[in-house]
Image 1: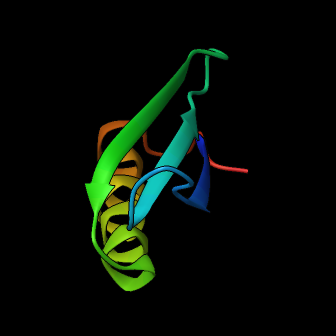
Image 2: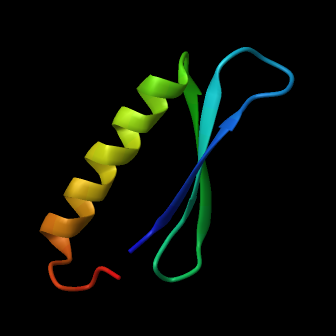
Length: 58
């Protein structure tokens, strides 16, 4: 299962999500106006990951 971290942006308003994939690859998703918006994206991404990789969660 991927690891998600919601982080407040420093130079611009809003939030970003740092994602560490199951294989260790790291990505950053930008463009969230609120922490709630970022959290909703994380929840959707986790659901998608569970559907595409069933039984591989921790």
